[in-house]
Length: 323
Image (cartoon, rainbow, N blue to C red; front, top):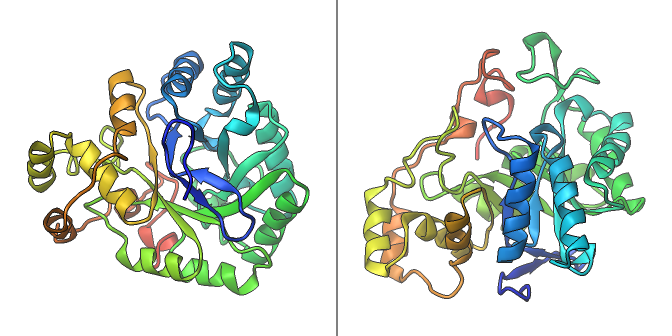
């Protein structure tokens, strides 16, 4: 495993040798803060050393990310776009075989880029073509045609529109369905994971199948309708943090990293952006790892029984059939 010039370790994909910084900067903000604030936060994060940026068609942050990249290049924060690793995601309304390539081209236009580093299927369900509203109306849900959608994802890679392809929010069962038909297996599965939702079975499955797991909501998504402060207020994590002279957030992020999992962090607060980078020059001991391993488990985002009021999914079972 190498590292960026700022000391963020990188994971090398076995299938194509591409390298991904294991710590990424998330751009999904609920409620949205506006394009200018998003762009300024991204610029600040580039100054601090972040090189991996995670966005999605649905977040509304592709455009400000693209503008931040252009500005970073023009003022010399980075010398080349190749210094960055950019991930975006395919929305459910575009999760149809004939709409995947056009959707990626649209994302590239928003980002002002010629290629992506990673393109993910956002959720393992589709909705009626051209449906972009959120929440998704009950009558607009459709089961995903995995064959045609994954074939189109592979076409995106063959066309060099993206260097790698993957999925998000996929269970072991749905990954098995994809692996059965894939010529190019998914490089990444991005899912909710933190010390309070440890994804043990999924971690083992992904490791055994050469899929790199990446964690979103690593601190419990506090402040969103599905999240809570259960990670940051966890007494076990707070005790370990105190003993280490770290924050509970840093302990949580370090724990994820020590599981061999990538992590997407999201903070537009400069001090916390710095703290989130400070997880690579120390480690958790065996006793601390054991205490975290024994924490009671409960889901956040994939544990919400979604209704049409909150969308995008009617029930957990629509998207998550076991770990």
